[in-house]
Image (tube, rainbow, N blue to C red; front, side, top):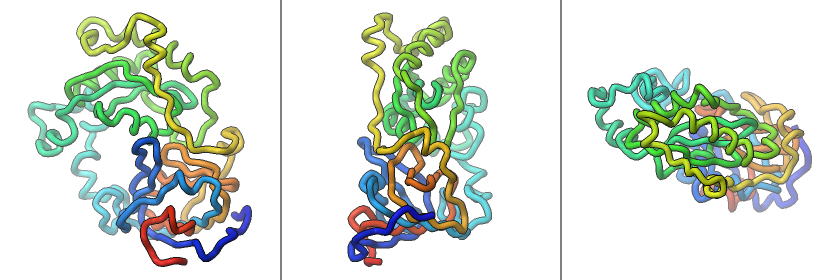
Length: 287
C-alpha cells in the first residue's frame, strides 16, 4: 500500500517493537512499544509519510515475554485480566480481594462513571484522575462525568445500573462520529437520571440546570485532517503486510493514513516496524 514517497530520506529513522498501547496525556497520543526506551509521537506524524510493517513475532503485551497469546497464560491468571476488573459490579469481592496489592494500586481509589460520544453514546468507568485520558484512549469525541464513587466496585455497580438505558460497549474501529454529540449526551443523561435514584443517588453528579449540564461536557482534542466516512472504509493493516502512506490522524488506538488504518489495539504483542521522521521516534540510529 503506497500513496507517495517521503521527500527527505536523511531525516528518517526506524524503530521496531511490540505495541502495548497508545497513551493520551494532555491531549497528545503516544505509542508505547515494549522494546523501546520511549514512545512514538503519533500527533507529530500527522501530515508525514511513514512506513509501517507488521511481522508475526509475538510477545505478551503485559509482561513483554515471548508468548503464543497476548496476554500470556501467566498474566491471564492475574489482574488486570481477571473478571473482577472487567465486571466489578458483579464479580468484585473487594473486602476479600485475592489481589490486595492490585486493589491498593488500582481499585481502592476514587472512580468516576462517565458517558462518552463516539458513533453512539456509551457508559464506562475509570479512576477519577484519568477521565479525560481514558476518553481519548477510547477514541471518543466528547465525554462527561455522571457519578463519582469511592472505589472500582461501586463504580461498576453504577455502570451496571446505567446499562439498562445506555450501552456500555462501543466500536474499536475507526468510525463516523455523531453529528450532534452534545445533544446525544444530554439526551442520554435524562435517561440516566431515572436510574441514579435510591441508593445510587448519592453518587450522582448531575446538576438540574441544563446550562450547567452542557458546560460539563468535555471536547476531546482531535488530531485528524481527513474525512471520517472515507477512513472508516479503509482496510486494517495486518501481519505480513506493509504500508507506506501519508498520516491523516489519530483517534484512540488507531492511526489513519490515506491508504489504510493501523489499529494498535489489534496489534498488541506483534512485531511492528515504523519508519518515520526521526524527531517523532525514540532515540535511534538514522535509517
